[in-house]
Image (cartoon, rainbow, N blue to C red; front, side, top):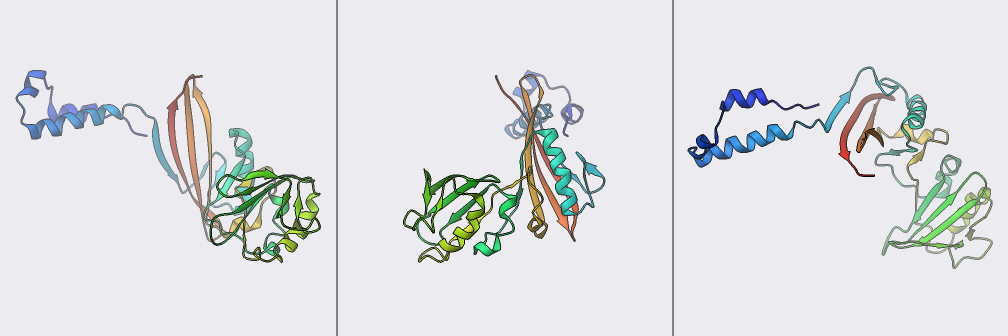
Length: 245
């Protein structure tokens, strides 16, 4: 945390009266006046960054393995009111076979073409049913079937049982023009079990906000760094902001 160093200002420049300022050279004014306002502006303790390499933060313990950190995150998410964590720089998948064991750990998948104008399909589901399908370019629209040029036996339909999703993805990827599409997983919902593939990535991220006083909210943005299969560092960026209800 930073605090204003008013004493250092007085020590460096003494008590400066308005009349004295008028007699300063332009260079002296350019040095003193910005320095004064810089020191004054830091009086609000509304931003800081901290790095933790020993001990713990919010119950997330340095030295923990990815599955253990995930459990700690799940507990923190309940306390702080957030619901997901990002796997930083996660790579896309190229074939349905690569995500077969991941589907039950997520609630959304995105399929996107690999060349030309962007086309995508966003498929949402719960443990029972495909709940929605959106398709298109920059602004996907809700549809009831995808791909729309596929037969009903191949296409993925809204309200299909979720157990059909993998089988239909296999069929879609056999259609001309769809074999090179990318499969993208979203941020990891913390309400569902750990995805072992997360352990292959050295950085995770999450964020949350909480009201700390009337009209004031604190926001935390956090990166978790792993090395040699264990959590090695927590990087926390904190900001405060005012708001009006």
